[in-house]
Image (cartoon, rainbow, N blue to C red; front, side, top):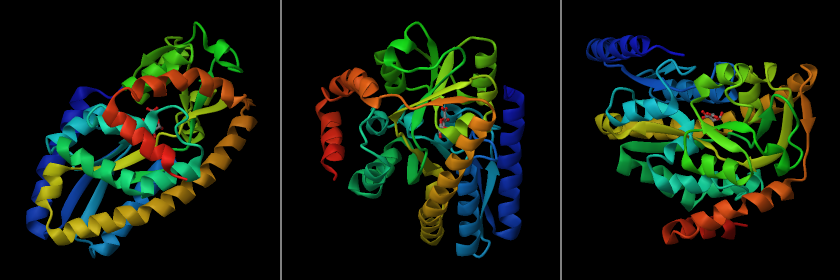
Length: 327
Ligand code: GCU
């Protein structure tokens, strides 16, 4: 686990040296923190954003990337963005739902028919509205990244039907939708940050977790969990954000460079993602992880009550309807 003192020293360096650099050279450096290792396709997407931004701005706007949760968990980093200590991040849309509740809709189990449906939603008016919505909470969205679909991986047995989840403690992200979903499917949801999970799995604090293949592989959780059941209960994407305080310090020209670079990095990130999923599935098989394709309709039927409860709120129902109407 990252020690708080390390985080404070890093933050001090960002604030002090970042600021000093700015005055002398007129180059602005934006600190970008995220919680994935450098081998992860989301990190590669961020590198593409870094390169495009340097090109667009002719070297005047620079990203300094802090991967691997060096500056804290997704929630901690979002709070640091709000107060203006860190400029940018990439988090799961599920983490954003703790700040802007409208983001919850993206994590509703089985709401997207497939990836094409997800991308059509994100690229359309609803996706744009969600990115804007974050500004009400000092967290301005720039673009969405592909985070694939999430499925269960476990230590002791394969999850073939939702009944197999009974009495299992399953780690979920720190958000209510993930908790409700996993509980509805029959397990006992245990929220914790991604950085704490390897040890929790190893020590038997939890019996399993759920995630996409690149996160399962790059985190090395597959060393402990040898069963992966592709029930694909959610397609919750990732989102790239800038703190509104930093955003307001940029000139209109700098804002335009950043917007363009972020949008342009999306297609590169999707390509890295597709390649990484294929490689990770091979790696899992080679490492002796059993992969199972269950009847997803069993899981979808059981999770339906999460959608029903969520849709009781008229504002949330509007969002659900909007997504379901997209063909
Ligand atoms: C995905 C997602 C991350 C998130 C992680 C998690 O990998 O892209 O942003 O932190 O899941 O399960 O915590």
